[in-house]
Length: 430
Ligand SMILES: [Zn+2]
Image 1 (cartoon, rainbow, N blue to C red):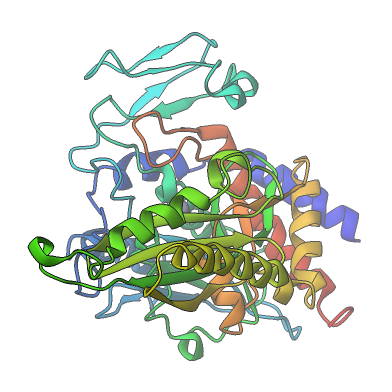
Image 2: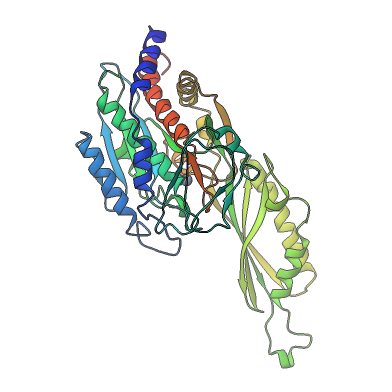
């Protein structure tokens, strides 16, 4: 019975006219860049432009409760069409684009039947996308690739995710024979500046678990992120008039310089680590002779390692201060986010369903660890288990960003499968 329905859906999705490409091309032309320096919510009002478009399209698709709230979040519900008691799944993507590169006047270019040759972006021919720099493109030969035109980012991060979810909704609304439980759609602002879930209303959402659509290569499934702390070290010197500073003045800038110089050069840093290795990283320093503040980020997949790194960092501070009698330091640790795996390991079905959905779509399931954080890592610790599923978006945050239309379509198919897997298994392994 299960096999039969899987076949049935394959046949249906084969005949389906995907809307993901057309949607993607439209959504990327709406400027939704977020702004880390802004204090408003959302950080830029223009993010609501896309929010309004999505709300309107969801309503037109027949989802009556679709709405954009005052904080710039879009919520929508697809009611269950099954008599079974099925967990509520949420699919989530962010509407904003990264502040790293311009998002104004994005002109998407479709490269049909990509042949593996260098892609020269017409508006700035010095911008060339090559297989050498982007090896994943080698697997995309023969597919349809979308890039920006050279002056801006593309915004596939995360409008690929937004377009995939919208096409998935479209599919379900057109194919009421596909059985599923209640589904929640969530589009968030300000993910790129780390505020994507600040104002999310989990009660209103009412989901049992969620998936962000914000991953890269086809088949990738991210259920692990860094654990992260911030550290602020303040060095206190002794100020005195420099004209009369002899044997009195101790310059905190020099203490901080000595401290930074003590950091190892061939380990312990982002420039010298990869894969599962963690690091500490000075991100900002400011001060005067009297007082200097140095800010660090501390990262590792194992939360317990953060403490070890922080102890080591503090040793360097102590050593530096030891070289300058009369100076002192303060050492302050701020928890930032935690590895989502610590939560997800308690919800094995969240991965199981995604794995089966990918297998049914003929996609090789590939588990990934993100050397960073996601909105999902915070949602996990707010009580909503939330790993990440691929969208095909690649080389994000820059002008070389690209996405394959076929990858986006596969992702839509995976979501369609996923809600059915969940419906089929309901009551079996709760
Ligand atoms: Zn993203």
